[in-house]
Length: 290
Ligand SMILES: Cc1cc2nc3c(=O)[nH]c(=O)nc-3n(C[C@H](O)[C@H](O)[C@H](O)COP(=O)(O)OP(=O)(O)OC[C@H]3O[C@@H](n4cnc5c(N)ncnc54)[C@H](O)[C@@H]3O)c2cc1C
Image (tube, rainbow, N blue to C red):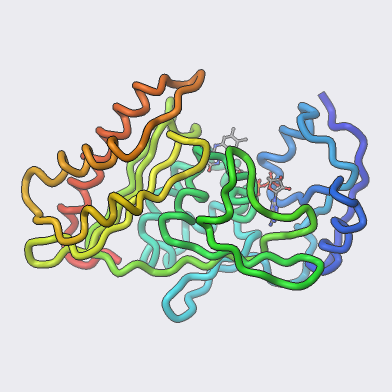
């Protein structure tokens, strides 16, 4: 099938792109890597009157920069650049580990971080990582720029909180103080969307967990950061039972959804197994792996 007819606009500034969206009165769509949008257009599941292509914008929208205690990533940065970045590997190692699970190489070469977050697939890695790191999204609209916390961004499956004229321009990821971490995922085939996945990082003291981060995806309508579990981990003694206890904490705080790819029971079971494995890996990490 071919897309329904649309007007194509290729602005050279973000302000002009916002103007074009405003002029489209809610009937406009932004085109970034096109890896999710083009199939939707071809199936006519979306029929924008105007397509606003971000790829010709001259302002820097593709970058990975270290700034004080966070890493700033431009919205048009391709998945492959993030996957191969030494800065990401050293400062955001959980993200580095997750990126090779994002689709297949051809898709990673075109897909962008801004597109992935905006598309808000509940089984996509980058939305989950934005929650995990407590990222902030810098978005530009008709009245200037504003910051949206990742935890406020994902409203429902495939639904974000952007206004129709707003464009994500940058995402800032705080660097976690951690000395153990893991990313675990199961998909039907490598590169498919996850059936279930978990990201964990811990700051280990001499015998206890001093701090922890936990996020999961593929099990609910949005990715989830498990703040309650993080609180329960703080101060807990590190011993051989810790991975089992962690698995119980995670499964008792999440009630997995089922769909045509996997039943709710299977996803719940999978999540428990992945949680156990992730904590084993995080506790086995040698030294500061940040
Ligand atoms: C076969 C297949 C398998 C895949 N598997 C995975 C996977 O395992 N994990 C995973 O994470 N992803 C997966 N993807 C999705 C892929 O990562 C996409 O690249 C990504 O979801 C969308 O990024 P994009 O740049 O291509 O966005 P586009 O397709 O161009 O846009 C997607 C949506 O976001 C909006 N948008 C784009 N950029 C912005 C912006 N800067 N501001 C506001 N709105 C914007 C668009 O208007 C559109 O609604 C898969 C895709 C395919 C086709």
